[in-house]
Amino acid sequence: MNRQSGAPTRITLFALAVALCIGSHLGATAHGATAPFYEGKTVKIIVGLSPGGGFDTFARMLARHLPQYIPGNPRFIVQNMPGAGSLVAANRIYAEQPGDGLTIVNFATGIVLQALMGDPAVKFDPMKYMWLGDPSLPALPRVLWVRGDLPIRTLADLKNRKEPLAVGATGVGQSAAIMGEFERTLGLNVKVVFGYKGSTGILAALERKELEGMNLSLHFVQDRYGHLIENGTLRPFLAIGTGPGAEAPAGVATLKDLTLSSDQRKLADFLIQSWSILRLYAIPPGTPPDRFNVLQEAFLKALASPKFISEAKRQGIRVAPRSGKEVARIIGLMTGAPPEIVDQYRKFLGMKK
View (tube, rainbow, N blue to C red):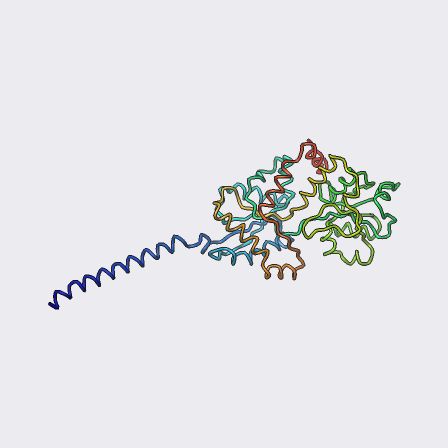
């Protein structure tokens, strides 16, 4: 009787052990199938400019904070690929499509403008890049700064001035030169003087009274040269464009104080769009949508985190993120600009038709 009852018991125990073994194997297989794609992976951020600059600094900060917002906590590394103002990197990473979600490229807005102008050196379509966003406060408002000792207080004063206001720039096509040329199309008595080595050279010329003005973004001057505003060496005269966290200073003239033609308004809108994005982050076309969504969401979460904001503040960097969708929208608006506006911008760049 005992033998008969023991046999099924042994069979039952054997069956249970087999079931547990199979269940354990299936559980391990299921875990492997659902493990995050990024677990154990390395993600590269390719920066299109040289080490040590603003783009590089921002990318390295992001690389320290992004992993914790990505399932699988991947390793991030930053590699610099300078060349042609970040065009080399933009072209190279675009050519890697379809993307695998393991390479992010960071380049300047000016490269997108080159694409829109039909520059044959550009080998990518800005409408096909998959945009993660832009972490920076935009270069808005763009401000015409004048020397504090000049008797120019109103737009009428500048329009009616006998001698044109001499504003400095490094060369044709540079952002300060573009704004100077735009001011001329608005009927303002401005002359762009070329050949200065960056903002430092322009400011030195202003202090020597060799120049009378310059065109730079509000926050750049406030952050780098705030003492020159405080001591009266520089005075904001005209502010062009605004955005979230980038409002024009109180009491400073804006485009609303000018009577613009339809073409002038269209040109202003185009320029403001181009200045509203600065440090672009993207991944190559063809990246699987689920990986794109993970990276896009992590990008915004990292930039909004108190730790990132605190580190940026310590380094004197202003953060005002724009989502990938917003970047795509802005680039779409620029792409749809009328041909006559594009032609005018090409003239600002010194390009032939």
